[in-house]
Image (cartoon, rainbow, N blue to C red; front, side):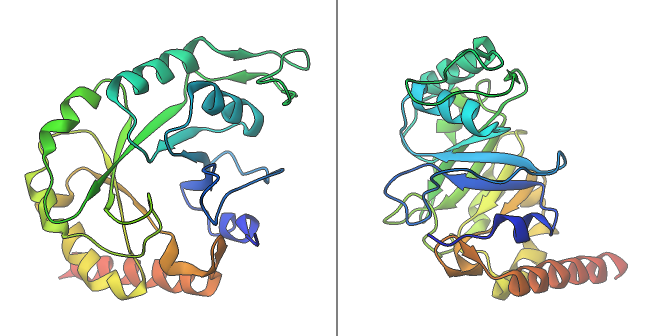
Length: 231
């Protein structure tokens, strides 16, 4: 797989995601780059075991995990407890049978992002059990694959968002979404929208991002929001 996180990191996003689901065409193997401390390194998992997640966190020095499968609230609690208690000691502790951890790692600040997929509507009552075990929610479009489908759900569903938990907005966001995004970000439904998660609409192929398109999107959205504020 070709991918270009170094070039993406130069755009200074708040988060940069790495896919650790083997069935994804964006699956990451081997080393990944060191990021500036201002960018949080996020590992994306789908129904992985607790051992797999903590091993990847230790190996890649992840700042956050994004759970894109059917993980329960109890799983999230177990994961958070595991991350709080787990300590990778310098040079003499293995995260699993094959991965040597080379640097000390304090996992007390690890963040958990739980993904929920939306098609036409959504039962927000399912969020209640996750409130105290996740740091963010992420709302994506329900599709054949867990993420990266390139389709947008009806964001007006979020007008009924009952929580104060900050959330990520995802699902088919592209350059052609700027007008719609501007309207959403200036509506009450976006009150707790913390971040935008962009992916497939900015790819030349799975994992390889179009930097020119990303720059155009960032500039266009910023200009639209400034213009709306001025008016």
